[in-house]
Image (tube, rainbow, N blue to C red; front, side, top):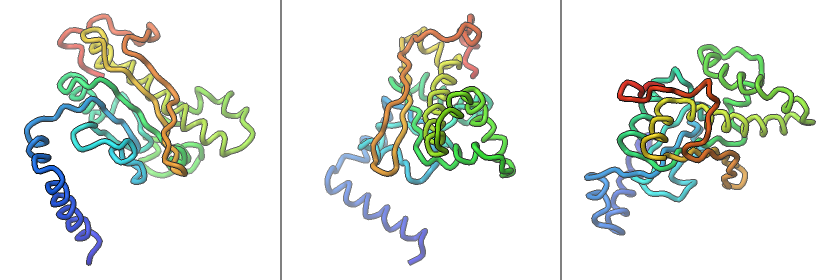
Length: 217
C-alpha cells in the first residue's frame, strides 16, 4: 500500500472506532468549537499537541510553525491569535518548544539556508539578547537546551506585546500565557515561564488606545 493511502485507511479505522466508542462524538464536534487553549507549537512531527497533552479533538486550537515563533509580521500567527482570543475566548495560550529543535539548532550556526534565514534571524535575536548567559555555559548541548527555553520565554513575552493580548487582558482578564518545553527523550513537558493575565508589560510596548481599531499585532 502506498504511504499516503495508509493515512486514508487509518482515518477510516479511527472514525469507525471512535463512533463505536462514542456514537455522538462527531455530532458534538460538528456543531460547536469551544477550546480553552491556544497552542503555539513547533511544526516538528514529533510534537503533536493533542497526543502529548492527552486532549481530544475540539479541546485545543493549534498553530504550528518552525521553532514555535511569535513573529509580529506573521499575519498567519496574528490571525490565529486574534480568532482564538476574540472569538473563541480561550483561557490559556501555550507556547510549547522542544529540546532538540532543528530550527533553534540551525539558528546557532552561521549556515545559510535560503529563505529560512529570515525566519531563523528571530531566534538569533534571542541568542543576542541572552549571549552572556549562553556563552557562560560549558557545553554546546547546555547552550542548545537553554536557548530552546529562552526562545520559548521570549515568544511568550512577544505575545504580551501584542495589542490583541493587551486588549483581552483589559476587557476580560484573560488569557493567561504559558511557556513550556517538551523533552523528546521521555515525553515530559517542562513549564519554563508563566505570565498571568494583566502582568505588567514594559511601558514602551503598551498601547493606550485599545478600542475597535486596536486589534492589530
